[in-house]
Image 1 (cartoon, helix red, strand yellow):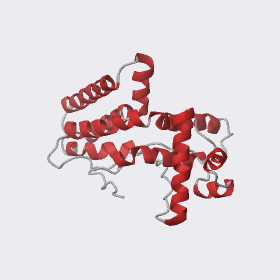
Image 2 (cartoon, rainbow, N blue to C red):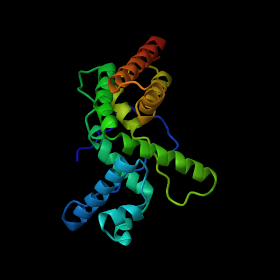
Image 3 (cartoon, one colour):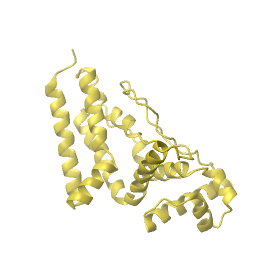
Image 4 (cartoon, helix red, strand yellow):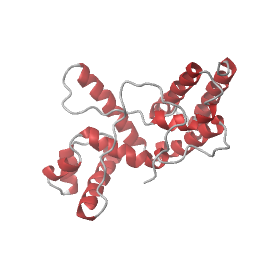
Length: 225
């Protein structure tokens, strides 16, 4: 699987790194079992709209619970793999051509991602649901599994914004990076869909309009000093 090349400017400091998906076995029975469990989880979320327990995935897959837990020891591990299956093609894609400017590269990233939000909406909503649920449990001292940490969008957007490396002051560039991370995710998608009941095309148009406004405002604010 092709991996992202390192961002062309340092990432802003964040309090944690995003959770990485378990490495799937490369071949044989183990690879087939991993795929079966993951596909079952994807289907259960698609049908029922909730995050299944590992035991539920095992039963539906006709696999022992002990076997299922060896592949996915927690819901965090499971949902990380679900999201990776949903968005892996975007995460592993190059950020854009060397000749393209930041605006074009940001557009490329958003346009590649939003169709996958549409296709895997239940799975990505489930990931957001788990993150919010675990936040509440952790705050109450009741979390019994490692937390699911989101944030792969930070590296994706870093690659898209690389052409601005020498053009904007670091503080301005970092603020733009953070602002775009609010738009580039299932959160903006759900707000526009649930509260405004707009079409997929209008969601994309609205988000790209906001992204353009942020980029233009950042450029106006001043070049790198």
